Each structure stands twice: as structure tokens, then as C-alpha cells.
Amino acid sequence: MKLLEYEAKTILRNAKIPVPNAVVITRDFTPELKLPVVLKSQVPIGGRGKLGGIVIVDAPEDITPTIDTLFDLPIRGYLPNAILAEEKLAIKNEYYFSIVINKSQATIELVAHKNGGVEVEANDHDSFLHVTLNHRNAEQAGEQLAEYLDLPGQSFVLQDLIENTYKCFVKNDATLLEINPLVLTTQNKLVAGDCKMEVDNSAAFRHPEWDFEDKPANANFVVLDNQGTVATIANGAGLAMATVDAVATAGMRPANFLDIGGGASAASVLTAFERIMEFPNIQAIVINIFAGITRCDEVARAIISAKSHITTLPPLFIRLAGTNFEAAAELLAVENISILATLDECLSAAKEVSNG
Image (cartoon, rainbow, N blue to C red; front, side, top):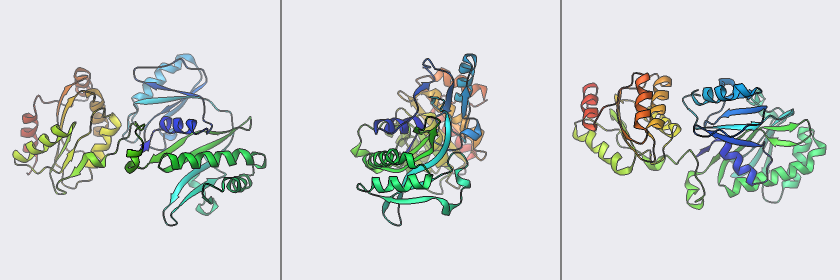
């Protein structure tokens, strides 16, 4: 599972890893903000800064319009459900710091570079520092990292950083913990300016506390027919099964079973569209949502984003009912996207464009 930045930084903070002071903004709640503030769109994708998803606000009158713009700005197909509002750091230098699994060596490895930030990928591959980590060598690794980064006065701080991130990585069953940039402030403090973190889906049984926006998808997405012509999206296992059965009964070839679950977000629904587009012969997508915890307007936003950013998206046949239906209908009407009253109407319309 890919964690959003604010989710990852909450874990870092609990692991005693320095992060900027921050609050989370939702569509329904904007806390009082201290200026200047950095507003960051919370989407599970990199490159936000270059795509307009990170904005520094200095003036009070710019806060609300900037927040509204960020909530409505799709970034590579994703719309945010939250915005992270952080203090603006006084940056002296930016480094790259990550802990990863080295699969070929079956080890946990520190990877670092003295040139971090948005252009880190421009660094030569051989110029990165690689150090194999274990629970005993934080002191040695910290000395190596301090020498590599030319930060001799930060050796003890880097030892603590390595020890705490290693423990955090193991404790949380992470597969990636990337701090980029690791910021050295003008006060010579090291702070996690940004964080990308991925955790192992299969370890969820050990973590009842996990409640991230990204959810394990494999359990709810089942490939039925790689050559199927009709894809399905529904919420709830019973409704998802009934939708698949209805597609088959109507004489069409269902490609998949997909239960987006209760509480599905725009991001998780958009992920479902991306999974569906991996099938080669999809000619129609039937969407059958009876919203309870899942909100119709979240589904509508995902549909709009998918239509805008997936150029090969086949025709959609949509039945929505339940929570926030009126808001969803308004959103879709603006985009000239139709909602059908019943599943039967969806199937009849899908059959006209599908070859079975």
C-alpha cells in the first residue's frame, strides 16, 4: 500500500523522526493556518511540485482560493481528499535519504545522496551511497553518512535518524521509506521535508491500527476473463457478485469482479479504472454503486477524473444511489455524464456497444 505524505509523516513523527509542523485540511475542515504555509496536495504519486500540487501561500486572502484550486486539480489522474499544510522551512541544503529492501541481497539498505530534491533522478547512479543496515550498525552507518554528506557535526544526529528510521521500517512492515528531501535548515536541523512510504499489504493482519486511504486491492479485484468485454465496478461483495452475474445473464462477457468496499475514495475508485484498463478488450464499464459509507460524490469525482485523463476509456454505464447522490448528479451533469436509473438500463445500454 502506498501511503500519502501526511500518513507517512504521522508514522515518522511517532518514530521520533523530525518532520515539519503541520495540519491536515479536508473538504469539510480548514484549520487556522500560520503564514507562510506550504500547501501540498495529498495524492499517491510523485512529481506534485512540477504539476502545481505544491503551493507556498504568504497572504491570508490567497489561502481559500489556493485550497479550492488544489482540491480540484487532478495530478496524473488523482484528485486529493486532503491537503497537507506545513510550516515553510528555511532550507540550507537538501539531501536524499531512503531505506529500501535490496531483493538481490535479501537485506535492508540505506540509500543516500548529497543532492536531493526534485532533481534527484538526474544524479549518476554510481554516486549514491549504499549501506547495508541491521539492528546493530546504526553508529557505523551514521558515521559513513555524515562523511558522505560532508556533515561532520551531524554524525550523532544522523546515527539517531538511521536507528529510528530502521526501527520504523521494520516495525511497520515497510517495503520503502524515502525521505526526499531530507532538509538541513539554516538552523542546522535535519527535517524530513517530504516522505514516500509503502507498506506490505500481506502484513495487514499484524496492524489493526492501519487505516490508510490506499487499501489492499488484490482481495477485492478478481480477474474472471482476460478477454472479457465488460468490466464492472460495485461496492460491497454481494452487490459486486450480483453485478457480475447480471452482466453474464445479459449475454455479455464480464472481465472482472471488483468490490471497491465501504468508504471508497476518489483515489481508490480511480485506481480501479486503471486496473480495468489493463484488459485488452473492454468495450464497456458498468458502475453499480449503492452508497452508504462510500459517497456518491467521491465516485463521481473519480469518474470525471478518469474521463479526463484516460483517453482510451470505454463508455461508462452508471447507476448511483445513496449518500450524496444529489451532489454526484450535479458534478456529473456539468460534465455531460449520464446516470441511469437501474442496473437493467445500464446492462441494456452496455449490450448495445459490447460484442458479448
